[in-house]
Amino acid sequence: MSMKARWGALLDTNSNLKSSMTRAALYKGISILLSLIYVPVVLNYLGDYKYGVWATVLSVLSWISYFDLGIGNGLRNRLSEALASDNPKVDARTLVSSAYAILTLVVAAIATVCGLGITLVDWSSLLSAWNVGENLVCIMEISFLGMCFSFVLMLCNNVYYALQKAQIVNLMAVFQQAVMLLSVWMLTLTRTNDLTAVAILYVISNALVYGGFTIVVFVKNRLISPALKFVDKNVAKDLGGLGLKFFIAQIAALILFTTDNLIISNLFGPEQVTIYSTANKVFTVIISLFAALVVPLWSKTTVDFARGDIGEIKRTLGKMLKLFGFAAVGTALLAVLFKPLVALWLGRDLGFTWSLILMMGFYAIIYMWNTIWSQIINGLTLVNFMISVACVQAVVNIPLSIIFATTCGLGIEGVLLGTILTMMISSVSYPIYTYRALSRAERYAGGIGKK
Image (cartoon, rainbow, N blue to C red):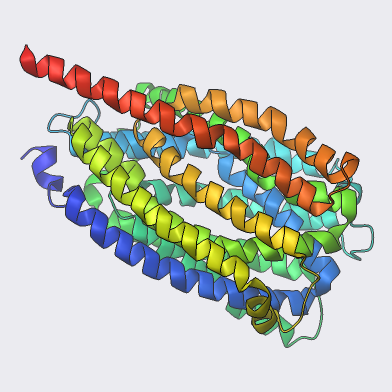
């Protein structure tokens, strides 16, 4: 029996997309609800100052998700192609086994080097957190090394994506948020404000959830379960080469999207990070729901392109653009209702200005627009173009944000304005390049048909 026959039902992308989008949105909604409940609980437990420090630490920890050198995204594309093909160039099980092998080696090396490097950094100065009252080096070591331990397990995300089961990734987030919420709630009973304890529980929750779902995916899909005898050096090299391109684009995106908290903490202090990150958290609700609906587009695009169905890619893209229109209207409504909703949520006003609220809403709209096109571009493996755009954005973002925040005197709104203007580069270039790439592919397919 061919690979395509064995996985045919799984890769019926039209029906799978609808089901995946519906369940992904449901799970994401539950995850967001838990995360919204989590914020006031941990804020009340840690206090404004320590919460601002923790929000900044989480921004740093998010960088770890890029330390797979893009291997996860390389696996996602190659595995999607293999499962969509009648005669794949590489067996799916070999792809998965090789990806886990090379990622384990990479993470082990990074954990060793960075684990030692963390002790050499003055984290109190870097985070402008001189009054935290706890050992920040210890907190960073626990968080970093603990995340490295669970990092290889996170590769299961890309396996689920390739299997057209993006909704399971959101289900994992539900479990992770639930475990964290329960853990921090239990900490509140101790009447302390121990940031180290919060860091430990964060690490444990990740390891438990990703470990459990890794076991589930390979028990249910033994045809792709990793094993040492299936590891292939050449396949690992190919995944590493493709992954390295994704990695460069990811690092550039990292600079764009995760440095704002660090800049604000250094320029204005952790308390301002609390205001900024909380406002961002509110608008992340609609961003996350939209992303949950759009994320399946990546692997679906890869499968449709492997089958030569350019028309289906364009039809799906049209549906996503209509969905974006509804999301933009929802974002505008959220901006109008922001203050009463936050008052209901937190029970107090952290000092949000209307300029920050409106700019954060515009940021959310631009972010969602870029999300659509980035999924298509990733699915088509147009990584070289992404690298070019992302590197320009990485170079421009930080100095632009600092200039607006300090020289122009705009404060934390200036940091956000710098990020928004930087995002406009991809907002214009992504759609143009995508349509050109699809048109070229369509013309090529037509030429082959005539021959």
